[in-house]
Length: 522
Ligand SMILES: Nc1ncnc2c1ncn2[C@@H]1O[C@H](COP(=O)(O)OP(=O)(O)OP(=O)(O)O)[C@@H](O)[C@H]1O
Ligand SMILES: [Mg+2]
Image: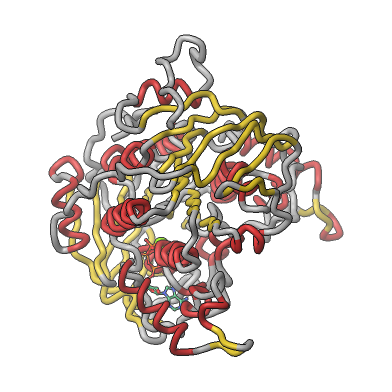
């Protein structure tokens, strides 16, 4: 497990009266009881972790808490007073803020406008007080040690920075309870300490924190108590210091987790992909590596190192300015993704909401979107064929949805991710590129997806995995390409490289003295 930096130190159990209590919360959606009589509370100054499998009801409970959904039954009590939050603004003014799993920022607006959206400071004549907006924003950005400016367009920021804008938004009103719904899903190990510091500061001020994550290391590092939901039911609360991962996993999935013992692939064929000194001006430079048939190659680096951009270039989303891409023995320079798909490449993108799914469309249609020719005949869709594709991946990845008719936008975050993976697997690619494949995926499904990827490689797929999670990269990869600031700094054998050496390679340290990279694969 990656050591967590920015420790919060020893945690004393907080024994105060809860600042917030949820009692008997029930929430139904068509075809789903998302929450069934759930109890939950948060004490001032504590971190209360909320755990559960994908689709267990965590985000829904928090949306009820923060006024985004109204419960069908149950009560919300804030500082002893029963509340009925009609909308998020109402909850925010009362001091209850939710930092969303799905980011909800307006890309075309500036950082300042996004932070104060709906509560812009006004002066006489109801006109926006721009100097005050600037000043207030700068103050918050300073508290959070953000490296971007108040007038930067949000659309131009990286996912990690957008996450910071979301957090900044929560601090506009003095919060009493802040809910973080998978806040580190898009942060790398190096960016997380900043978030932990923010949480520690909020705690010191007596703010109650709810923390949702699928990462056990974080949960055990940060939380005082852990509550678990399973299929919309509350299964219990334990003190973090009295429990362990195995017990919590059993509470979540009803059994201990069989660890992913599936072995890595060992037999490799010809080169499927070869990059030769590939460059995209001002983005990355001189990137060279190979992926063979049957092999899993991991790309490890910090956010901004250029890994996703390399993947996008291979896939035809960006043109390259120098070098060559050789795919299956042929030099290629795709002008669009369609050509890349035809040549046998699939990319499961990092940002599923923007690049992976049509949220208003149902599960079945999303699943077959990248392989329409296999489910249509003379321009007509074959409903049954489509359905059998959906069924196959629905079962293989245990996708939780009331039916194939459900709009993908209504699925839980982790289940959306599974649909994207299924959709690309069904194109039967020769080269499968996975960019952060298990972000937001629960521990059980994560092991299933890892096993699936290894099986795919063993059946002859060439696989390129981009991940910011060290255990994932080490657990999956035959070889690891380390990137730093747009360059490949080293190539390692996936079984023998140490964590320290990998960290050095992705942070640009000791590049000359680093343990000698593995000689190039044959
Ligand atoms: N707006 C909605 N309409 C219909 N069903 C919904 C809606 N929002 C959530 N659901 C359903 O409620 C259930 C709980 O979803 P929720 O998003 O709360 O899960 P979660 O525990 O946050 O999962 P994850 O870890 O994947 O984020 C799921 O079955 C989901 O499909
Ligand atoms: Mg969720």
